[in-house]
Amino acid sequence: MATSRGEFSSSFGFIMAAAGSAIGLGNIWGFPTQTAQNGGAAFVLVYLVLAFVIGYPLLMAEFIIGRHSRSNPVGAYRAISGGKPFVPVGYFGIIVAGLILSFYSILAGWMVAYAVEPFFKLIGADDMAAWTVNQGNLSRNILFTSIFYLLTIGIIIGGVKSGIEKWSSRLMPTLIFMMILLTIYVLTLSGASDGLKVYLLPDFNKITDAQLILSALGQSFFSLSLGVGTMLVYGSYIANKENLVKLGVFVTLADIAIAFLAGLLIIPAMYVAANTGTEIFDEGGNLISGPTLVFQILPELFNSMGAIGVPAALVFFILMSIAALTSSISMLEVPVSYAVDTRNLQRKASTWVIGGFFWAISIILVIYFDKLFGLVVSFTTQYSQPLLGLVICIFIGWVMNRNSVLEELKKGNPEVANSLFMKVWPFFVRIVSPLLIVIVFLQSLNVF
Ligand code: PFF
Image 1 (tube, helix red, strand yellow):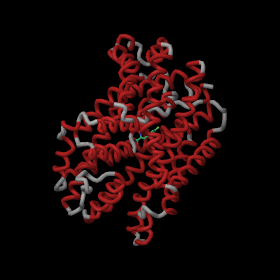
Image 2: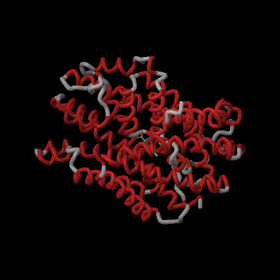
Image 3: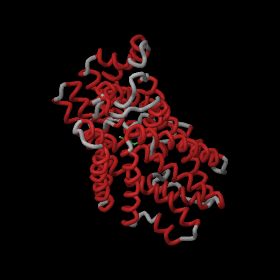
Image 4: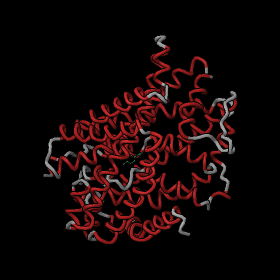
């Protein structure tokens, strides 16, 4: 079976793909938003610690399980543990990955819409431009969500090398370049330094706030695409010669770096907008976040920039769309890999059917947005991802044979047995990470 599965052709290709999955709306939108809501730099600090203490160990766990089994989550649990209690968890992960795709594609569709709008403006089609950015218009939302699905499906049909790897390797450098350019520009505008202060000077009183820690945990799971099997499946396509420990470090650092950069862009941008008269605080005195931030404050800022505003808006929303696309493909790949390698189905047909299925769920979410959207987001990201992560820690720490784990790590890294990694990681993945997940989780249910 291994020969018919795809494989990434280089470590660069893999890093672009896995970092592409990790880096998404969660980094560029979620991270700055959460930072703004949770006391600025205090949140950044807690997030950094959790990303290293829980995120990286879990990412490694998924890579190891994936490459060792060369399979999707269901196949992996079946092969490694001989089945039973873990197989349903594999199925659950696959469903959650699909549900994340369903809500994520709606947000991504909005980004695409805003990226298209400047073109209509440019050709003087003002009515079309206004329709494109009308957040409340149902047909507009259905159209752009569907366009985003077509892009995602189109890439996944191409498979690992000529779909995921090829497109991630093209899109990710573009995204990083655009983002650095835009950040430098925003930081030169007046008002930006006030934003920088809020972003970089921590309010230490907030650091032990339960809500802050919970948000930071959720954010680190979501941002590193953990729990639902995305990284496990990408890991199953890594060549044996690659050093997993190193790849994991690169992906984690890239994810953190882009989130940090996004904060340098968005929070100063808000203060620049405030300088031109935009209200950036809500009634409670907190920085405005969520859709209002992205689809109102930032567009107002772009409008106030004069001639440079249109290209700046274009760059921003194209980079958001790219970030979303390299993440959504990794979500769709999870169920598709199950269909292809466990059910022996054709990739192309499976991608259309599975993509179509989750598209239909997205359309239901668009129609019943107010009732359902928030529910699906919290069910998948706040509850399911950490719980699935907990199971993965238990699986690799307590169930999977230690020699198999070591053997897997040794493949691209013969010295690993004596490395610092092997002294620290097993302890984290067996004890520290699961305990922290449970504590933060119980905290969120108000048990303490
Ligand atoms: N990591 C992505 C982001 O930060 O936007 C979101 C994500 C991708 C979550 C893949 C879950 C997933 F399986």
